[in-house]
Length: 218
Image 1 (cartoon, rainbow, N blue to C red):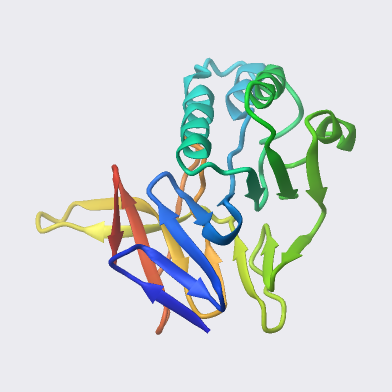
Image 2: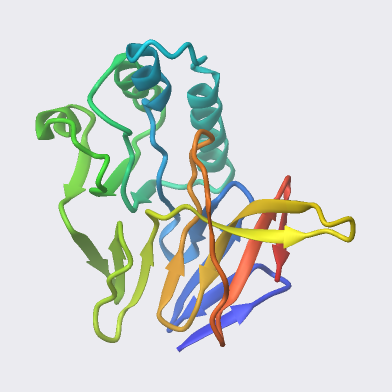
């Protein structure tokens, strides 16, 4: 059973505790692990190869944010539920490798997403542990798309969930969000250069929107 603590922006499943972070990821407290999804690293390089002049500033910002999170929470591991990279290897791949080498030892577990199409040898070069469809640990199931596994609680990403909020002047604001129910946590996209798909909460589910530097319980 999942117990959600709205004011603390956290929840527990069994004896496992998780905290939602405004940086669009989850801290698995028991294991000092950051859980995130959909970095789409290399997207700026992919666009530049296609002749679209996009700065690499977004990719640099994502890695700086990730470095800060790792340091702040003393995380020794990342679990990434898919789309770590956006497409084929490009100059950003080399930049990512240099970033990882600059850190203390960091374990990275990747459950491959539909955009993770680089050759397996490149993941080995980065010392990333790759799982093709899913990863299971302590009764927690991780996959790119929401599939679930029996009585396990699961994490996934893929759809870049967002919530659309209507203002008094008929304006609308779309915010990335976490979607949590009794069996699943749907993660927002971690990467800056990602859109969002508006979702609605089913009965019994909770939505936590991310607005600026705050998490809003809706």
